[in-house]
Amino acid sequence: MTMKSRTIVSLAAAVVLIVGAYIAWDSFRGHAETVHREAKYAISATELLAAFTADERAATEQYVGVSEQVLEVTGSIRAMESISGGKTNVVLETNDPLAAVVCEFDDPDVPQDWRAGAVVKVKGVCTGMLMDVVLVRCAAVK
Amino acid sequence: MKTLKNLLLLSTLIPMMAGAQERYGTRSGHITFFSETPMENIEAHNHKVSSVIDPATGAIQFAVLVKAFEFEKSLMQEHFNENYMESNTFPKADLKGTVEGMSAAQYKVPGVYAVTVKGDLTIHGVTRKVVEKGTITVEKSGAVVATSEFKVKPEDHGIAIPGVVRPNIAEHILVKVNMSYDKL
Image (cartoon, rainbow over all chains, first blue to last red):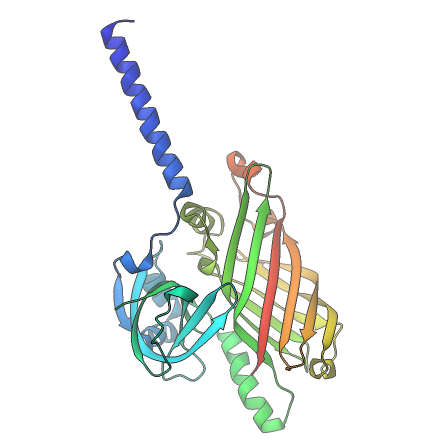
């Protein structure tokens, strides 16, 4: 094998290794931590619900987006509800008694000092609206 | 999801006006699905299922946001939403039907009741009639818990799975439902 052939084989092997490593990493990677992701929009809970109530399709396009995006939502805590799977819903006030912005946290990520009535800032991935606007994988913004 | 919201509104107003029986609802029901093959197992969870039961009529509704299904692996979640469920086009799935095998009065009596849910299941924009078995438990506290397990074939709902990944995805996906309802 000539020097040139050896170089080509080595380069090809290196490329295969790098591509393989990338595919393996991409296949097994978990979700990026929401708290470290940049929020695409910062909005109040009241404004977010109003946007979905006024035009759900347009609000879904904007706030849910084609690919996953993070929102930063500010609001007053209406309630905190422990749900299944080690998760807690932090329900943000919207001035609509039948609808809210519901932020799903892993239990350990809910700040200990959060209480109903406190005004908080949350980062989360908006998944759309059913009865409430739903954010998942939420994190507190300090 | 105006229908669900309207049902919730009615649930609040009608009992007050007519002294009728309460409805039961949840906004944080849990649905999981499992795909088990020799190649790999795939599992996803959705803790944001909305559901309402009206014992007087037996009506039951479920609604989920497809993007609220969470996978352990980020890439799987992307493929699920973009390639299979096309969740930008079909952001919600729902079931509208009736509960059979349980009277309105039994919602007041603690016990475990075997029920059948008949209705229309819409996934990926395709609606199919379903008849599934389940259990409704009325706890001593008055809480109502509904559980069910059933299987869904992706192709029945127009979900195309490329041949190259077909061995990785079960022909029938096992769906597990667990709802804890509160009185509305």
